[in-house]
Amino acid sequence: MRSIELIQFSCEDHEKIDIIMKEMQKLRINDNIKDTLIFVEHPEIVTIGPKAKKENILPPEDYPRKFVDRGGGLTWHGPGQLVIYPIFKWDLKDEKNIKKIINKLEGWVINTFSDLGIDGKRDQRMRGVWINNKKIVSIGLSFLKWVSRHGLSINYNTPRGRVEILEGCGLEAGITSSLNQMGHLINRQDLEKNLINNINLLNRSLDK
Image (cartoon, rainbow, N blue to C red; front, top):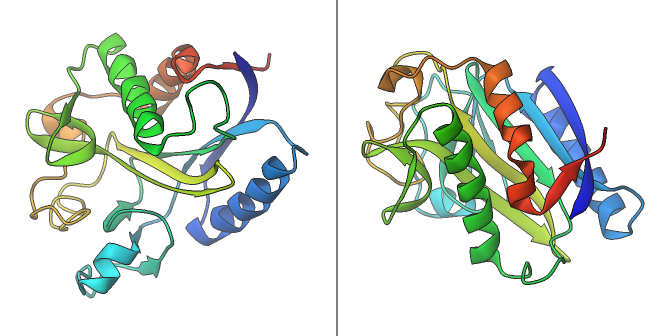
């Protein structure tokens, strides 16, 4: 079990956090910092991964946008979405496998949802966590020397229609949704608390 540090921001620009992540990734590669978990929300922006850029899949004109170097296609960020960035060195036993890392992150969220009375599942259509055929959690990482950057986003109370209208990560419009739209009224504080309570599922423990 590896100890980690937790950084919790309220709401910060994606650009600012991206700069922080890049610097922290370098520090983690050189063992100058511990594994670090970042919780944050962003002002509205749609990040566009290489796959979406190549296929010219873009958000509507009224959405702010930014090209990024993580896996995946379009991902919406904004109010009511918790974004989680694990700046982890994935070098513990059996960790150096991207599929296993994604499985761990999915399992972490699925168990957290279960503790909140929510039945989250995997779906063969795309990685992430799904509820009743709607995608609630997106995952997209990039790695350098097995240290991750970017992460996962949980739609818990997003504005109606802003997520649903997008072809999120290449899915048809209307497939991506939010916990509140599915009838699960969860606040950010409870979501973070339960994620922290399940952090051992990532073979990590939080510094007290």
